[in-house]
Picture (cartoon, rainbow, N blue to C red):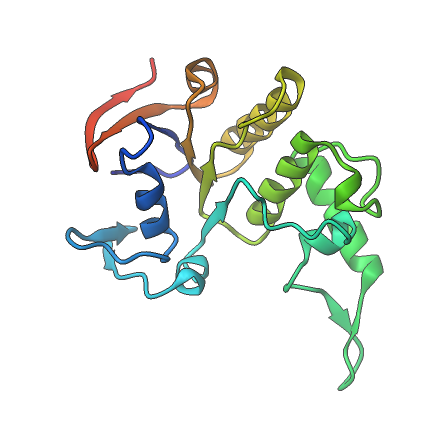
Length: 206
């Protein structure tokens, strides 16, 4: 598997082909039994999920890892909260609201308000917030596991628009595990086919 800066790569294959295992290796959750991983040309052994994240590898899973009872802006800054004050640090809600609204606007993610609870959003909006949160955390490589699964046409279009904006306005590289070939041809630069744990097809989408 190879991935260029700012490239959107589709990872295709039947169930059990090895796509999810590969994604878990890239997140540092699984250790590979063979082969090497290089980032910026340097060999890297990912020790953990936190190690992978420290290198800018951010996954967005189907369950999104969002907290339904928290607002959009609090989810955007979950475990990365902005604080102010002296020794007794307190949450700077105003700064987080402002930063969340600005970032979501730049990425073209429309939500009623950054104060609304995540549970009140549609599936497409929730997925878009999860992607925006990963990008805001300085992701260099974004891993999307079937980002439009179980979504309607309208919600899928919202996610695809977010991915297009990433292509146009950032250097974030994206790997998408996908089954919808129409969407793959719409947003992806290159296609890899995984069969029995091996990449058997690697071509530009065009």
